[in-house]
Length: 242
Image (cartoon, rainbow, N blue to C red):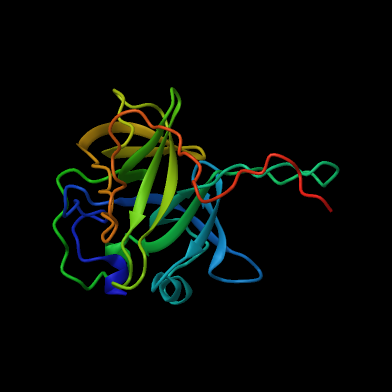
């Protein structure tokens, strides 16, 4: 349970590298598991927004054994945004679309869950609820939204790195497509809205791989003349007799 609560003074620690990708935040709400599976359900926020949610990692055991799910809790979450599905002509009306999805990975309530532990120092600038730290590469910048690519660290050296895209509401202070940005984001309803945006660094394009054992084609100098027919091959002027 200690690992779920995290050992940092802040539930969201500062980045350890200048170009560290991440998407993490805090949201207070009441988790309601579905009837089919405990780890899948919804998160009802204090302002009445219903968000699809899943439990990940050791927070599953924490939620089963130590949390009163009839109460609100301050969750540490990984946010995701989704595109609106297409309407099926003639089909039943779809349920209300919520673009947000939350992966619940921890709970930030050390005083409630660990009253016997030594009180940790209170951070000088506590992070508010519904705050998110988003760091990644800007893929698209429009007047009202920004698409950010978040690269995930692979679990081992064999797996290929994966990435996903987050859509934030708002705009950049200046054009920054293809650069790495640090965003401070707040949740407003079912949207993630940019509060502050800081350009970290441009992202260099990947180097082109060199192809070995391949000779370049010889360069020709001067005009190209048509090739004359071979002298030992007769030119047939009439069609052959059958």
